[in-house]
Length: 147
Image (cartoon, rainbow, N blue to C red; front, side, top):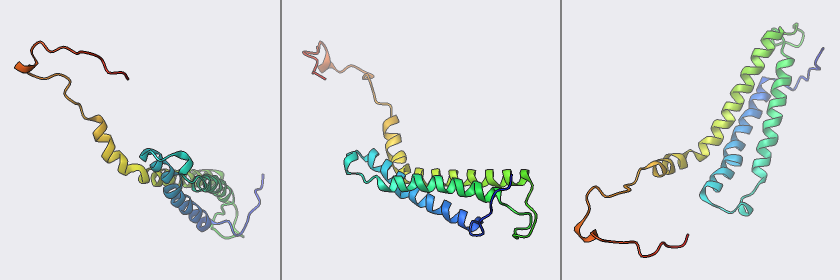
């Protein structure tokens, strides 16, 4: 089955789409996640950057697959089509790299919280005193505070 070739759809455009996707991954969905971690009300967080990120991600995936399906052996329009194996490997590598880059850009926005909050949440606190103090002898809990 022959896939129609668009002369404007080339590797540079696919790379540009993935870079734009990474930028919106950082500022869009990454910004949304960062503000959610900070505790900002969801009604105050703009949703449009996240929507743009999702649209760009889907566009980048489709453009990459289409570009890989229309690869030519020497890159010229007159050259014969590349083998199916080469198209598959090139397309898979491009999609994998793009998705990892977009996920990395998104995670980079929230990573500051992981380095600060993560260690604070995992610290073990002292549950019982190693030695009873004399002032504590005979102490009783009077009432359990309501939750």
